[in-house]
Image (cartoon, rainbow, N blue to C red; front, side, top):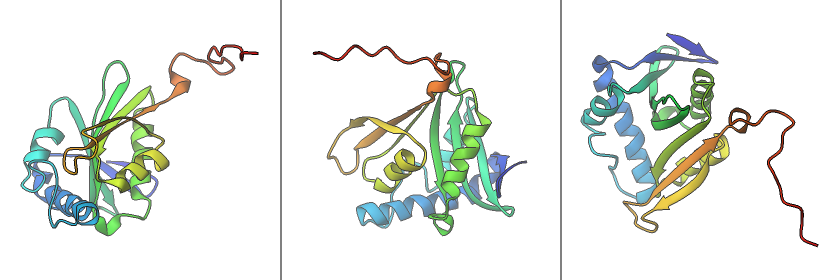
Length: 182
């Protein structure tokens, strides 16, 4: 178990699937209610454990349970690559614990766990404006592409966060900027 601020993190195991599927279902259904005015909604398998078995247990992913005072409150899945361009595949927090800064603390933990990361990438549904706010305003991502714009169910935002201090530039160096035209 790893501790960061007031949270604990443990590697996700197959035996955890039932508990975290219930949390994932609550989190995604809350998003569907809030943004789509629908009772249910999430990626395929989010409500029966298939999503977590496929992605959280993928041999190339790293998945951690998020615990508060030993109580399960969320989970995240990342893919860490040799080139230090990594992917945040999924992060969710139980609605009971949302809007209390837990997601931001989880993100700080992720960044502290993978300090060599040069670029983080993630993707989120277009309808989930709350996710956009979180990733852009709380975590420092930039929206780099929108697929299927305007499609209520298929619109997808692709985001990226680059750490310029790790991209080959050292302190004191500046990017080339052409002289202004006179």
